[in-house]
Length: 408
Image (cartoon, rainbow, N blue to C red; front, side, top):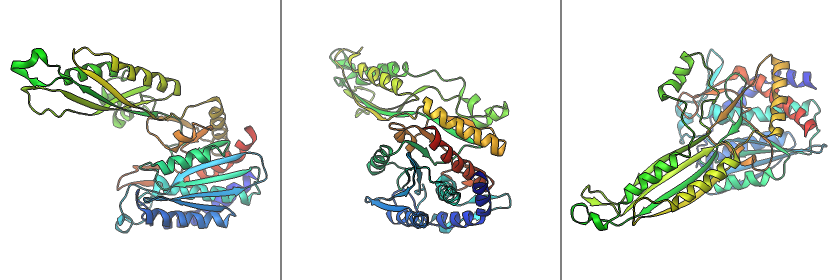
């Protein structure tokens, strides 16, 4: 089976590039219902050719596709990728798909996530070509709203996760066989302080400064965060490269707290503000830590130092982390062994502070992330994908799926 898969994918390289060109030249920006429908209809046609049953789901902003392949085994596998991009309609006409002399492909969304969307199709083609059927069901969800998120997409991921035994998130890959094994969870809070406003010169003795209290609360809030590793200038991509350090997310602090928005209705320095607020984003790598921080943040509502003020804290945990559990470690070990044995490569495990659908699948089932084709500078007008990684990455993905059905 292994040789059949490797030979088939090598032979299908030109067909892969042609399909990637077709998909990249479809404008399918986040929020573009017509575009995401066109992209997912292309995917559906390819999946139907493999014998999959396809289902479209819609809201007023996007088209979502669920493709199901039936096998003869016991385990169900969830694969997740996305067809939406961050680019507006017309972008594909301005800079259509092209391949340069170095084997890099260019175009809007070419790497995030269209090269990987097509990778899944060819990986499944290779598995079926090799006679692989040791699965109960392979569910392939191509999200139409990954870039912006939506209740529709989150509900679909939750639904499908509970129908599967493990998930592989087919999002953009890190360089040099990099994958993502941990992602931070996300929590959001709004802190509102009510004080007593009045004239600073004549009434300060019977007023209560809401901004003063908010400053104290923010100070206490930041005491909950992990310390930063040092001078920010020492941790830029260039600074790390200059020191010969390969960045795999290892310097991301365990817990981060960001007060991103702050304000008050008061706009005069001679007036004591009677109100103030801030909006806060909190991220961390473990469920237990996320729950601890949630409790301690909400407890700050009872800690006032400015008499006459009241603190109200709303919000909470939005999305859980993608943790590296013992089951995830088994998945990592399988992928690493295949990469080493078949390609002589060494897998680098990345950690990430950003969220993907992997955060949502991980709530229910073991999840491995970022097994896509390697790309660079996503979300920019110079996004590219290294086509030299397409066949090796697709081969490793396909062989990993086959092996994972044996270990769970």
